[in-house]
Length: 403
Ligand SMILES: [Zn+2]
Image (cartoon, rainbow, N blue to C red; front, side, top):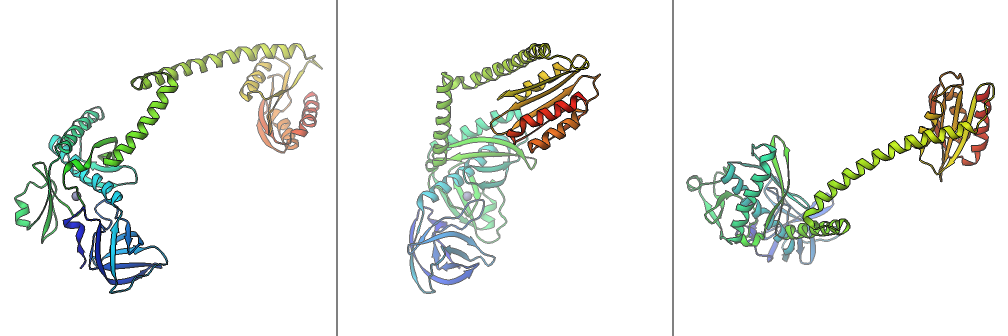
């Protein structure tokens, strides 16, 4: 069995080893070493990456037989008996160790303050999550998070020692373990001085100060528990930079201080709602006036006024409003088109006492324009992109409407 060097020294980044097995798994080479500092994926923590004799180690997994497999980049080959020098990516290890150790600390903080247990733990690409049995109302959770975050960070700022104990199940039973261990022989217990005792096989900081900072990003309800997303150490710094940059940019645009961004945005949204309402009201009024002008300029033929009009680059909703107002009275057919850069949009409407079928007219026009459309006998809309056919199409439906 491979000796786990990361087990006793989580800060060891360079080591020598001998290849004891060389396997081919799914066209990739995987080697087993007599000892390794590479942490294999497990317990919610991604594996280490790095190199063996300069060859990239892309993945490290434990197989069903408990072997630690180091997967090498394609095209590389090591043989049994080779003496190799391994080097783990220390920046990556430190980032993982900060999240993992931070998890022990924040989990104990929630346990001490609220009796909440941690049932799930995952280090994801940007954030780390834990599932807590935290039974609080949503309005109480924010406050609970602040308290737990403060306790956790005070433990980090204390720079407390973190010790590894290898104990028998009997000895473990006497320790105030935060979670039960199901291992029956030797149990590895991680002690954060006078704060937390947890059975764990992961990589941990030597002192809490290495974690740097814990910041909770968000929470949600998931699997009937409270799921917390948080960042520690270098990830907290990255996250702070990102948040600071966007906050500063928003504050600059709004010409306010960072503390006033939220109230400024609320005010802007309210203004926007009010203005949109006002624009709608004014559009209604303008449509009425414009419809009256169009009607005045159109002579009736056999008691029907056919209002035909092509607008250029006009809001289609406005054209629809005008069509509605045109046919409010009796004896009107409205045939309106809006010419846009790439297409033509049409809206046809008629007064209640006129018999022409707008749906039928629309089908004819759309066919000429190479598009689609339809509706009811008294109101239809559609369009197409053969702009050059617009005149012919309008002429055809105008003739049909007059029949
Ligand atoms: Zn751990």
